[in-house]
Length: 215
Image (cartoon, rainbow, N blue to C red; front, side):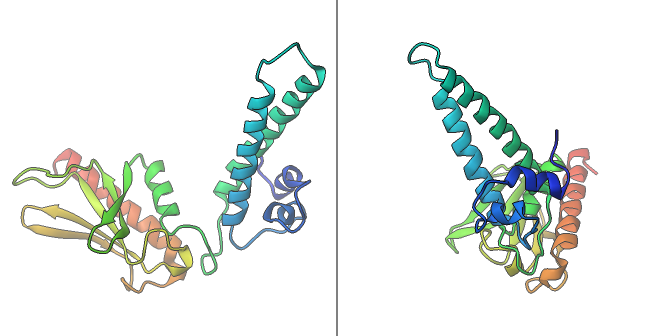
């Protein structure tokens, strides 16, 4: 059974400490930001699968307690896996969101089938952009690069609440072409984050499709 409601999520989270993010979820409290909930789910799932693997090791005759533990861990892993899918789909309140600013961007690019990787700025000594498309160091003289740079004003690891907008650029034989800029970039309002990120991905998709068709 999939986790699709708050009640089902609370049932899976039951048993965790009340003071923990999952403990709050178990009591029916939805957080403004799911970053810490996601992190606790990931850690619990990792520990559960590690224990499951340990119990599955063949180091002696069959033990009914070990077999019972394996079944219990398997059920817990399945439940936590379903809960992970649910929390991944939840939206945060952007003005307080502690999630990485590029999280939604990378997720939408993945859903659109657009390859993406982080780009490192030697000048700034930090990751400051996402490279979308088929990245090559040199697209060739007289050709348009089959990729675009989605630049972020802050460090790409900064939280959503510090978002200042996206700028999409592509190298062309005539110079640099700006394909998209967030409203007010580089001081875009945080409240526009979701619509802004979706618009950015649409612009990236359109630009890369045009390149592939040669239009």
